[in-house]
Amino acid sequence: MKILIVTGRLAFDRAFEAVSGLADVDVLELPTAVASLITPQKLITGFSSSPFSKNKYDAVLVSGFSRFDFSRAEAEIGCPVYLGPKHVVDLKYALFSGVFSKTIPACELIHTKKAEKVKETLAEASRTEKAAFHAGISANALASFKTVSIGGDSRMKVLAEIVQAESLAFPELEAEIKYLIGEGADMIDLGFSPDADETMISDTVSYAKSVSSVPVSVDVGEFRQILAGISAGADLILSMDSAGLFEFDRLLSGECSGEYSGECSGEYSGKYSGKYSGKYFPKPPADLKDIAVVVIPDLFSEKNKLETLEANIASAQAAGFQKIIADPILSPPGSGMTSSVSDYFAFHQRNPDIPVLFGAGNVTELYDADSAGMNALLAALANDCGAAVLFTPNASDKGKGSVRELRKASDMLLLSNLLRSSPKDLGIDLLLLKEKRKRPDLNLLLISKSGVFDVLHLRDEDVEKTPDFEKMPDFEKMQDFEKTPADSVHSSAAPAALPSEFILSGPLNPAFAPGTKWGWKPDKAGNFIIGVTSVSDLLNYFSDRLNKDEIEKLKTVDTPGQRVIVAVHPKTFIIGTDSAFMLETALNGGLISEPSHAGYLGRELQRAEIALLFGRSYSQDDIF
Image (cartoon, rainbow, N blue to C red; front, side, top):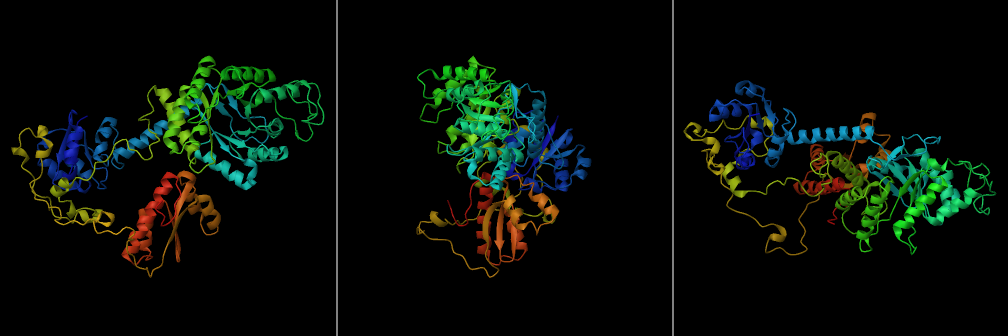
């Protein structure tokens, strides 16, 4: 496929360098500063005057920022004109993909196509997976969800914990459950305090089951609490060691002393007999074979940790549990984390068919560092150790987002396993602050050569009003154009020079006094209060003032936590996720009359947008 890249002065050198060494790719520089402002007529004139007009091309690529209709140019040139990437740095990436569109920039099209491929691949993997078992009591009348595959070759599932679930009112619990599912949680874990009573646990688990679309686990320490969770229909129990399993053995053998119920039947035939219908068994629980259980080692035993874990697994199997997940326990940084990872790997080598729970939250919650990179690496370690479940709480402010990060990491690692490659260039990533391809810094010399000031920021309708095409370079007299060094091919026009003066602003000015604030004037049009809030809170407040289409549109917001920016003016509320559009709305509505106020508002809205994108908090005028 022979391709012609058409660009302007600003990007020519970088474009020429980007495609150097690639066969069947030529670069045509037109004497226009910004490539996105190359009109169809300028393309026709420039191409016909160049030596490239003698060549036959399969495609011409123009700037991804261009919004012109090139159908007339296609007829003149004799091949389709497509949108290339928005930035030259993505040019080689786009050429290798070979995916082009006349309406969508190549970089965005590649991203969209890869995202679609990722979705298809993950869906196909889910259809054909062979799991160790499925979590979820399908016979439970409250269960309206599909069971979740655990282990085998299925994707690592994210188990999100709600700490001290008994402290939440039911509407708060429901909101938290739905929030975590929206973040990507495959299962919800209800953590309870040691002093939470059995009735409270039973009621909380029952309610959670009624509103959750995914399996629900109970995370407690006392055996009485475990029984309460089972009686309420918990799909998963966290966690059982030898002490808890001993109590199960007593219960099932009829040796209990009445402390767990009014009486014991002494008989067990796969189900509790119904005589366990006292305080802690309001209804007969499901078979133990239907309940998944996380088994842990005896942490305070003098015996080898993995040996006690394997012994406890054998005890759980003897008690009737068939859906067993092992948790060798991940130690936090500074307390044996590396050796505990080694335990995970050793256990998986010895017991490859037993699913493993990896407590990523044990690290992220005890490490004051951003969680995204840590969760990505922890998920990779878990994957190497055969983990089936990634466990994390959603308690601390710094840990917010871990569910979303672990879910994406889980998807990435499944794709990596399927493709037998490293988790890179998959179509999804966890790059939040870093870049795969960095845009170049400002090149002052290039600006001085380009004449960019004449056309920068022109609107589409103004481009056609700019002066006619500048005199073209004499291409015919240039020998071997395709091999001419990039820095020697420029138009003959003399662009405007850079300004001769400069100003060092603010703290960079030697005369700047620390503590000085920028000046401002009161705006007679009124002031703004800016903040961020969740769509759910917004709908609760404005439900009677929004029409159906507006409500449905708000529900499509996909920012972390589904939050939006709110700018409150005495006359109106402006709601959005894009600071530029919000500022334009305020200007068009006559809500700003002072230039300094417009600058201030733009700055604060931009800060709010950054907070929105990264799931951070935002406070107006607060620089931290």
